[in-house]
Amino acid sequence: MTTPNSWTIAAAREALRKGEISAVDLTMSCLTAIDAGDGLNAFVHKTPEIALEQARAADARLKAGDAPAMCGIPLGIKDLFCTKGVPSQAASNILKGFKPEYESTVTTKLFDAGAVMLGKLSMDEFAMGSSNETACYGNVVSPWRRKGDTTALTPGGSSGGSASAVAADLCLAATGTDTGGSIRQPAAFTGITGIKPTYGRVSRWGVVAFASSLDQAGPMTKSVRDAAIFLNAMSGHDPKDSTSADIAVPDFEAALTGDIRGKKIGIPREYRLDGIPAEIDALWQQGIEMLRDAGAEIVDISLPHTKYALPAYYVIAPAEASSNLARYDGVRYGHRAKLAQGDGITEMYEKTRAEGFGKEVQRRIMVGTYVLSAGFYDAYYNRARKVRALIKRDFEQVFAAGIDAILTPATPSSAFGLGEIASADPVEMYLNDVFTVTVNLAGLPGISVPVGLDAKGLPLGLQLIGKPWEEGDLLNHAYVLERAAGFVSKPEKWW
Amino acid sequence: MSIDIDTARKVAKLARIRVEEAALPELARELSGILGFMEQLNEVNVEGVEPMTSVTPMRLKRRADVVTDGNIQAQVLKNAPDAREGFFAVPKVVE
Picture 1 (tube, helix red, strand yellow):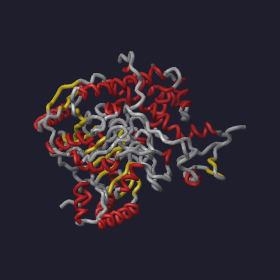
Picture 2 (tube, rainbow over the protein chains, first blue to last red):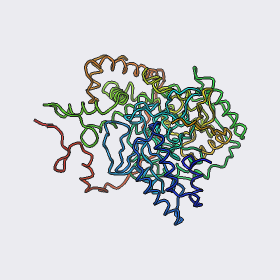
Picture 3 (cartoon, each protein chain N blue to C red):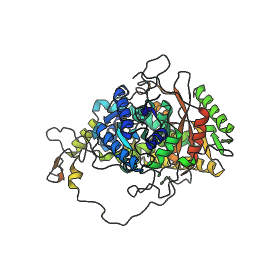
Picture 4 (spheres, chains in turn cyan, purple):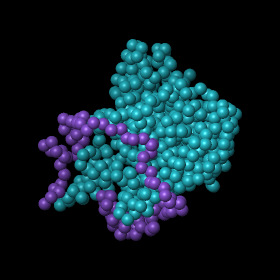
């Protein structure tokens, strides 16, 4: 018999509605797991009082028969989301002590639907990283370990706290955000499901901005059905975010028919990279067979500008970040450096930002500053935006040719050890995003589904990419892949 | 394009991040490495391509230009490191 904290949203929804468990008991089960899971360092601000109050309110709604799908579901919230009166610091020292006076649109929607917040989850500082090693809270540890080996592994990043917490059953699901792969890569590393919706599907209001033309929030869950349920509760137009699309949100769960007969699945040849482990290629091939067996047609496609996605991203994302992060100046919120005699406002800015931002964030702000500076704007920033237009056109052309979804690996490897990459070259870490970053540049929805384990016993995922605004169809493809793969492995409890 | 120490110093200044003189060579080396990675973009023929300005082809929603919020001075100042008499306080800006 499994404890309730390990349930899916769908299972908990049914048990809650039938009265087999109360939201308070379900929440208590998660709070107990969270306290026992401190070794993972995933939850960095615990909010048990808020959780129990919300759970009691959810029980009242359940009793009254007014219970939306997420009512009484205990969630972890990434530290990037502003939550009223609760520390929200994007895992950065520069926002130390910041307690927002407002609630992000996503968390407002979730709470209105009756969801329960267990606490805030660690992440890479300002969502910049692929290993959760840049958080001011210290590293998050994955619940997964290599067979016969106790090396601490990364849960991936930037939504590493979310991934670790969901995989270790500290919560039923968690919010994530994805600028270049920050939902899908950690989901793949920890054997869970993560979807980045179409740019504009989910409001970014109250989510600490990294790169505004790329950022999108999404759910990280234990199943594709849960992703559909959760995404429905997050989505929709928000007058406070002018880039959120004013189009209807369909019932994503209803799209899960399990029937993809006659659908065309594109396999992009440019995603076959040199130096990728044979296991990743084999997994990809298995995924292709699974979709073919389900009646889909497999089509070789070309996305010719794929190779240039990473360099374009590492111009555009830092450029936008350097503008967005200009607001952290020690005036309105967060950290302010202690000043020496005679220091003026410039010294205040410079010292505050040097003390408050970590090394990787500083590096990206300076790269962004450089590519936007006079004389280099055209050579770097404008050229990257032109390449981005070509990357987007690659996708538009294959979808126009009748492709319904694209299947690729999610990551170029399974999870690596903490400290194994961080010390070396920053560019090496950037390569983690090689399969995911194109999706952000083109604004498309993408989902990572756990499909198998590698020889070391670590999870591997595959990514499906869908057409804009067709998350329902994308989730249905993912649902078929999930059922065919039958991935049920869980990390062995050591924490 | 390689970044020299003077350029690194200038970039840090523009970004308003204090970098000690001793740390500049390392910063210059790192920035050069990252920019070197971006040089690949020069291989792409972008002749006649418009820079992408919006992710989805939609017109941003407009709203009436009216005040929708306000009278929340205490909330606005609540998280300030130094707030006095209803204002954000900073070191002297003008002599």
